[in-house]
Length: 406
Image (tube, rainbow, N blue to C red; front, side, top):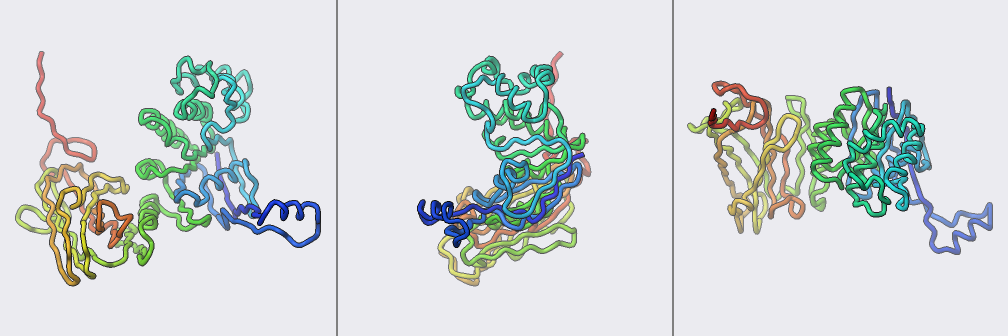
């Protein structure tokens, strides 16, 4: 079974003021250093037990790819160390290890041997690799004529033709088409069921939350947070908003979930309630009933424009539906400090049975990246039960009218 232990890992590169400083450091041993260290990763520690699935997130330049290179041994650490047990398959930079002048088939043999397979085993597995990659006759064409998606298909097929004890995947899957992404994640899920330990870098929130048990957030080369995917993704979402004058706060709810709130406080949500047709506030609702989502907003500073958005998420934090008053042409202008505004969004609750949450956002435009007045996850939690509908499965109630002809 596969394990990964990362202990106080750090990576730094030497930066010289000019080329002469580099030369002087080489030919004048024992003299003072003529470089500065640029740390891209520092003091990162975590562990993956057999069968764990952990996702790594962070903005570009946070150190994600460097971390994976150190873990797989394609780069050497400056400080700390990594210990891995079990067979490892890694899919890092797109097409890494492929020679552009060799055919896809020739590259499969080279890449397979780098993964520890013998020539006879690769030849035996070649039909499976070709079948999964689905690149047709291009398998015997030079890789230089491949699109990025075709390279990813072939690289992923080779790396996963055998179930590894540890599977490490960078963001290479993001270049594939929707069909192959779905196919790849299905293979990853199947490996997980069989006990493979997974370490994946992705910005796909839905994929992260459906596959991973835990998430790690890297920020400026340091481990900023780790926890459940929902908790870490909510925190990450708050961090990428406008940081000037804003704050990020996380508190644990009575249900044991972590609520993330961020923003500069120019406006705030003071109440979120789901009401039935009689205006009664409810926390447990029936499938398909008409409801109103009532949100009360307090304006704390004069605002030229105010947009309220809401998002309904399932218990895993995956987005079910969201909209805002910008898209609905209902944005408000020229608000004074001290104003209170009540919004009501009316819709049929066409959700499947389960636990759901409401996220609210107060901004000046269609996103919270420009003016984040307030972003609040888990602003309200409610249950949907099937009290009188026909039995069905899924997160949406889409009862059909059936016509049958014989």
